[in-house]
Amino acid sequence: MNDTNESAGTAGAPALNVISQFIRDLSFENPRGGGAVIRPDQPPALNVQVNVNAKPLSDTDYEVDLIIEAKAEIANNTALFAIELQYGGVFRILNVPKDQVHPVVLIECPRLLFPFARQIIADTVRNGGFPPLLLDPVDFSALYRQRLQEQQAAQNPN
Image (tube, rainbow, N blue to C red; front, side, top):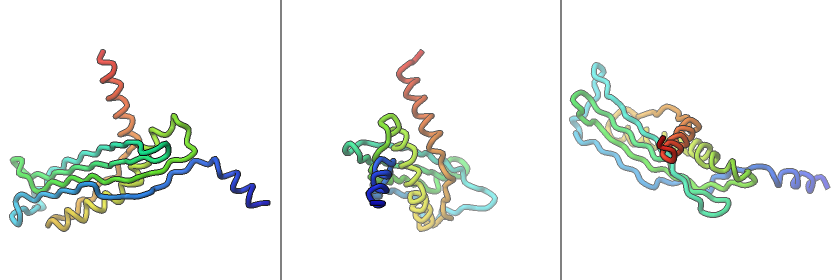
């Protein structure tokens, strides 16, 4: 009797499950080969871009792609390396109000993917002959708000 009460109480609880994670695309370029050396007196300029894309697969399942691009350059725009990672996941979202699904998909799902993508980038850059690139944590909530503002500005060009 106690078991049925507990399961009935949790039946409506919100749930976010990771179904799968995968590398969709990974590219690393070291255009200077062995001649690319980072000197302590000349630290590289890093440019990191983060983006999130998502699409529904069913009423409860969503595919989310975390796209991270990073470039390191030294003086005179000499490229040291460039890395691009598209890391994806399939998520199942249950018992979340319809108006809250969009933020969950674009904030919480990439937040769960990020540590894995960060490790892939660090390992790939290190294996490419450079010190590992340890990305700072990303505020996906701020990224989501920025994206909404850009969409609103595009709809209302006044």
